[in-house]
Length: 316
Image 1 (cartoon, rainbow, N blue to C red):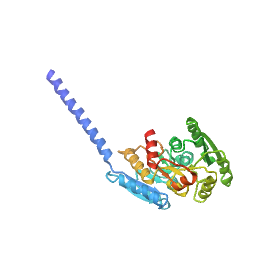
Image 2: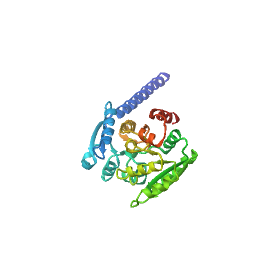
Image 3: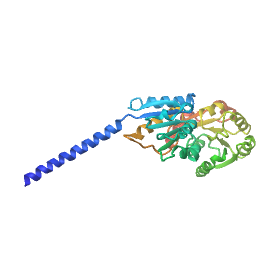
């Protein structure tokens, strides 16, 4: 009897070990399963292309297959057998939302206000998994940059559409935590911008640009910068192109940095047969650009771009 029990124990141990080994093998096999991914670009402009190229480069040593399609060419057939669609820009995300049959969607380089108000609901129809990497920098990071670059600033001005109201309430709270105040004015779609901007600049020490297409776009940016110069108010922008256009400095994430973060998310999200996207988030990686000519014209002496980036990174 004792011999029989001992034999049964040995057999049970073998079965348990075999089960554990098979489970581990199944997990490894599932994680190694190749997934087909569609990167949908809003258009063929250089920033969107760079995001795509960086995603491909970072996923080269994985079994995943990455394809590219433009929003204007997107059809249901473009997404056949795709495990995940990566929308680069709002136009790409809107094109995906218009398709009734689509895989989980990760939208990148999209404004937070768009995603929160309309994008998330449209993309997640039918309970699909969706997430986003925002175009915007987190307000906390922007305010810390203001404190580092402009220690004398006490009042931060913002001009925006009503779409941004909830976000600006959050900004106001963060500014108050840093002993700064918010000067804000909302503009309507059919309203001229210069009058409201002058109202803001008459009280604010600095103008914070937010990604609001109603305010900062290729048709309005030049006049907004010229008006801010007249008031001797520096502008903190959200892209390198705004720095080149006339912002004194900008806090932004490059297409390469967004592409890197996107690839990291894809690697962690696709495990076996399930796509588990992280919650929406602001960019993890960032850069600072300074317009030295504007700084000299306005009489500002700033730390270098590298020094400011290092300080913000250390505070994170």
